[in-house]
Image (cartoon, rainbow, N blue to C red; front, side, top):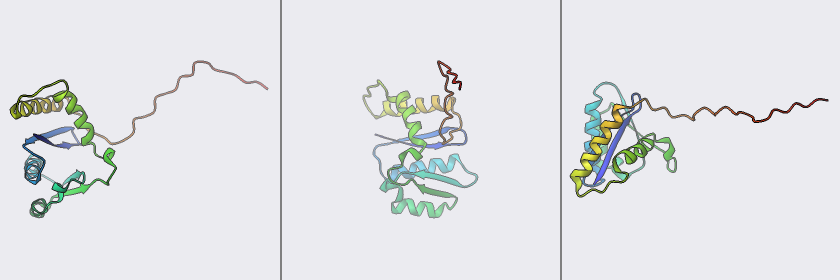
Length: 144
């Protein structure tokens, strides 16, 4: 069982789908769902370098949908993908400490975790947090 996801940065909402395997067909299902969820304006999809993201059926689908643009992440630069941070939250919410008997339980856990995370979603911003102020324990005064 594979979980596909798409994070909308402007409001922090996530779209997840489950599929039996990680392949072109599962990724096409995600593209259809993302296109339906965002009917207006251009879409920029930031992708890792998985081969199913650039297969012939995907390229054909992108040609039919010119408002959808794929932007690949450079190799060895996964920190640029904000989706990875969301996956960390998702794994903790849906999968941590769980044992699943079959794929329907994984689908249910995935759906519930996505709903819970979307209920408290906030916009995602890629930046470094501001540094914490330093408080000095002792102040020394040097006099000449």
